[in-house]
Image (cartoon, rainbow, N blue to C red; front, side, top):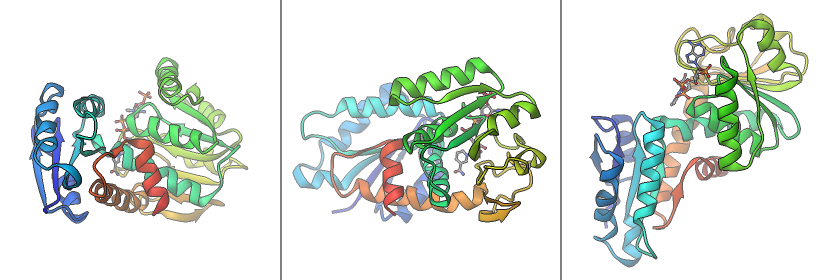
Length: 284
Ligand code: NAP
């Protein structure tokens, strides 16, 4: 029986990236829907639920993408709300690549050094990738500081993490070099999670941090979030620290994405959100 992936995308055109990755993960056919609103999800999911019964249900699965992470989160809820009893199919959410990217960044970091009990500063951590990376690092036992240009936004992100995952992260406003240095004080890990093309941490500041072990950055667009590293760095020693750039992290992100899609077809009741996708990456 063919493995069919139903791709639900809130953008006008369903992501070619997600479609190609699905085929590379071994999917036989992708049914891609663009411009999907939350109200459209239930009927599209019913199409997967009511066609192949019993054990064959695992050959149909749902992928939720799109550039809006908030829309993707609502679509995931709508999809899981449509299921009942054993009549369900596996579903993965990775809107804007946020789950796979955060998982890859944190896995690179924890494979470079143990983070439990150590400080980790997530710069511009208020975006979808930053919030997820902060969550995963806190789950690994790091003492996470999450920065923003606005204290209120950092506090909101910290509150969201507390409410959803029961984890504490420390919000911090960072608007100048002194504040960057304060965020890094005692940190073993610096992760830049800011918007594309925005430098957040200057080289002079990070090289001067004595206990800093790892600098990582998920922005591939110059200028990079962390000055003095390269996007291709994949554990490259730089000034006594190990550096990871967006492309170095991106290779693992692709592996995690493909592995997670492949897992969808092993059973019919998986829900792959950030924690489950991270666990799949960890097992690779
Ligand atoms: P985002 O939401 O676009 O931005 C993250 C944070 O950056 C924002 O919440 C904002 O924080 C801060 N920011 C925005 N403009 C800024 C500016 N001009 N100066 C300083 N800070 C600014 O980011 P995201 O979607 O989470 O993605 C994070 C990074 O990962 C991006 O660079 C993106 O390109 C990259 N990414 C890569 C992949 C991949 O597959 N490799 C996938 C997804 C994302 P405050 O307003 O709170 O300061």
